[in-house]
Amino acid sequence: MSKKILLEKHKDIARIDQESKRTHGWYVRVRYFGKTHSKFFSDRKCGGRYSSLLAALAWRDETEIKLGKKRTDRHIVTVSNTKTGVVGVRLNDKLNRYEVSWVNPSGKQGKTSVSIKKHGKKNAFEKACDIRKIKEDQRLVA
Image (tube, rainbow, N blue to C red; front, side, top):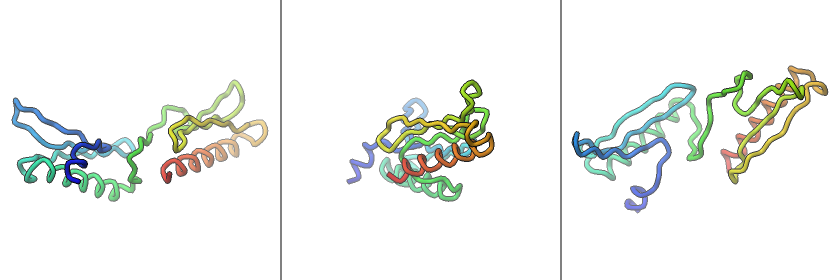
């Protein structure tokens, strides 16, 4: 079992083996709402490669709980590049609608839109945000 855990890839955890500086261990980075929380777990201080990985995994999980971040091994985008400020929801002025995009549980892209003409700008935005939240929750539960 321990060998399997060592060989697996672990989200937000990277192995560092830098012989020139005698640095060996696991580097953990938890990003949440634009802030990065990080810590290095040395093989020497933790009692070996396996022990340092277990410590890194425990720290990552505890940190995510403390921050209120959902624990998942799937990639989650928490920063929006759109002017709406909501990940996966963008305004298309040309077509007078809010466009919603997401990734479904099997990893495929999903898209839909909500008409501003039909629902009004405020209601269309709220509907688009609701759709996005439902789709993201479905992906994280699966």
